[in-house]
Length: 181
Image (cartoon, rainbow, N blue to C red; front, side, top):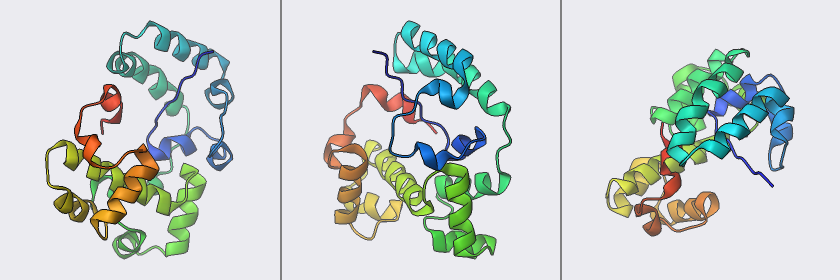
């Protein structure tokens, strides 16, 4: 059995032109998302790749082509980019920066990304913390930099998203290349 997981930019899922919330928390055949032709080519690339880094390199053009066929919602891309870059670390900060209502922001995230806005905030906070930990920063400093209320909150998110505590996250992993920005 072949199993292939793909991590896209949060707004890219909505850019595929379907309701992404129906895919949340379930396995979905790749051909139902991107079509049988591209999914077969992607699986062939995965089989021939020597490493995760190699797969990332050879599959990016194909995935870019799949996403180019769809219109990406610019307003959501801007909101997600603010969260991803650390310009905003909460929904409230997005409300302040954009002037949009909180409910409007939450609806746009859900429709375009298939995830609630709060989940995306947590995911980006986790990734900021993970990068800072890999850079060797002290955990108490990392929690503050990433926007956590305290170190215990950060540890809970690490268990939720990675299944480990923050300390083992310092070690390099084979899949690290897949988490490039």
